[in-house]
Image (cartoon, rainbow, N blue to C red; front, side, top):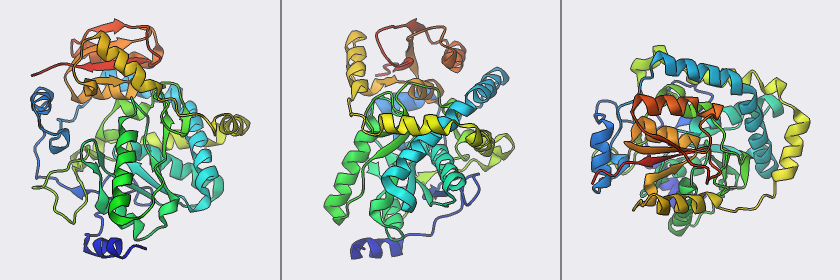
Length: 375
């Protein structure tokens, strides 16, 4: 192992046990910043972001859903549990084909965290192997948490790392990961596989995926209460020192409404019911799929048609549209079919926030969130 990485790893604090997952399911390589940062409302944050402040230096006020929204979430989870288990199985099997039994799962907090837990559990149930699973921070404009990577590399072989996320939007996180791993190599001369594994890849920008359809991943419907009670990650010099991991809040006060482990258990129960023949065939059919990057092409067309200056104000896909409605200031929501049953929670959130919904057929995504200009 690179001596510089060893020395850096020695200076890092041991990971604090945070989050509501079982300790065996996930190790969060994050610094607990409880009491050090105050959440800001969406309008205030949006104005600051659009005027030069970095999104990772602030936290949004966490959305606590109303009863009607939670009923939609539970019905959706009931309806999609088997489909989710199938996507987890396909993704996990592809990972095993690529990395084999020595795989080290590294999920990208926080949307990737529940997916990493599910893949870990599938591998353990199917192969009897208890693979390590870490969850670390990656931030557009600031890169990946190098301290977290040094911690992992001091304990494991770099070739076995498999990054995991929930879904792709237009492929921005995949680009950030690609650049970050290149930068890490230039600093430390350690090769880390860049491949990102996701359940849904509507952007068609990764090789390991469960599906390329823009499907609803039920964990996208909620925030911390389905992600181990963790906030999104924060990188600010006054909150996180040179030898600490990126920061996050642990919302311990919401343990009574936490659904993180309920979500995991609900899907894991379906692993026995997945069609293994279908899983194997899907792996064979899609193992050598081409990287087409169709997502960013569609986004560029939407950006042009709606006269949007910044491509980052266009958030395609169910997961990203949900995020726009939960923690940004939405301008419009585009849907390819207003009667699409996968969009019930989107329509509820849009109605709650008085955001216009426009039927827009000229996209393969199920929906797309457009952020309001605040400058």
